[in-house]
Length: 237
Length: 236
Image (cartoon, rainbow over all chains, first blue to last red; front, side, top):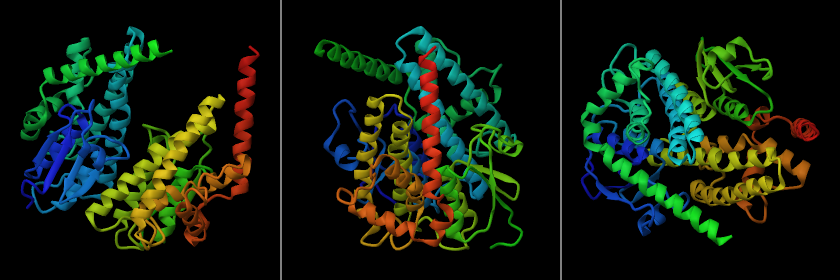
């Protein structure tokens, strides 16, 4: 079993991709050294570990670097296959389905709420909110089809797809507070809404998901950064 | 091949993502029914098999659909684990590296390259190409590391990354015919250029990759259509 010192995670507490990895580590009962990164002032270690993309999360295991949150979660599942629950399903068809929806969420859900964060006009924001709602409708259907009436996408307890979708919830919550949009509605997406509540109550989520205040603070920081960059660009012309 | 396995590939001959699945099936030695879709008039089967994206490729295995090319390749490797060579390495760390680079091919090479092919302005086109070449340089380094002196990203044998990148070969060749641009320049990226030669000689690759002439014709037609559409919108 890996002891502290064998496992290091470079992360950002409000990054959904980091949350996903931390939940996987928690599911397997693994201890690790967590190193919070300042993405506005990237550390030597981050730049050395991920020179290609300079992003988090980065898992360092026995000196080996593993990148990309989906690859990292699958790595954790495979290396510690004998410990804790299986994160990915065993059946190849179910694995393909879990990977499909995880890819969908990382593409469509993520770009929608990033778009909401970055929107500079009400119109732009409204557009992105509609996109988001359309994605959530798809996910509601996916949940209905794949959960077989159980509590989570993976069944009785959380699995790969729960992590993949659930890690984004912290941003949906923050945006609800920042912009007043209701994303998960007992009327329109009842299954997802109930699932989101259950997800938030899991040990892994309680341990790892940052509170909404922290997320909002980070959003403001990013906003200020974008504004500063835009102002600098404007005066440079 | 496992008895009673029904494999249908819903595809389009020109799509490198479809070629990718054909490569995987060929390398595994699996027979399948190659169903050509008319993308302007999609079949009921395609629409019901991939309702979310309505795109090819879709692999239908014993009636169950699997979508998204990289996911399909991993499915093929897992569902037919006992048959033919493994497409992913057995070591978890090497598997993670393969998954990373396969994603990189699509996000950082294919995406900007497609952008440059569809670009409406010279600026868009050169920006797309710039990003494409940057990704190619990075992949040269990746090949050096992953191959460990052997011929492929997968080492001695073809793996997920070889299949992901290899699926683009006909289009890479077509680009050279049409514009004179060599995306895998033998001077700047010698390992990739050699890899391209080596990969295209494999029987499984020859059977899966569309003919370059056909792709050239297809690309030229597309360009002409796009130009006509652009001209038409300008005269309004």
